[in-house]
Image (cartoon, rainbow, N blue to C red):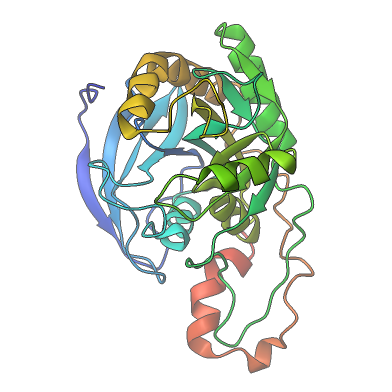
Length: 306
């Protein structure tokens, strides 16, 4: 996809999180979606965060006349494995840039005959099978447990579903996303096991993002772009990167239209529908939390933050 022209200026923002006051909708692009052609970029921001370096710079601008911050999950050159993505830094960065709402786009495998390549699925539940990545901001002297029974924002699902219908996309609302570690695709035995659980799609990234967004008080939803049938389907060949990219290329224009339409239906200034996720989540007495840990969590715990 061709990168849009812009008049952006590149700047650095420190880990204080005080560099931007504009409220924005956060957008995370996955495999094959490294930029948004309709995004009118004004700034490119390289962030330093308490959790390390994000996947790439954030592109700030307007999409459908709404302020947004866009990040390529795997980097603009796709150089990060799913496990190598610094999800904590990515989410911290979006929060610091004024994002209380995040829409993620990603490739996924279909676990059901009804969900065909080029369809879009909007999952509302996750099964997390990852093992080797940080998926919480807590630890280091501070214990917190957020509610996660309903991990996806209904407000964002409403916007994505309406946008998909408006753009004539084949879109399916609801379902379970099983998140595997990767980077290898499933064995057939694994694929059949997941099918027996009744899951709908499979991917390698979204559950981790959803958990961290909930801890950050950010509403989250994902538009999952079906590229293949994993390897359970007897009449389809094994999953290959070549086949995945071919389908993504075919569906990229539709996906971009759906995202732009959905963003146009949202108000960045509206409080997130999980803004109070940390209200009763932290169990550690504040006086016992180490200063360095307290500082890392300030963005999420300080009143008046977006």
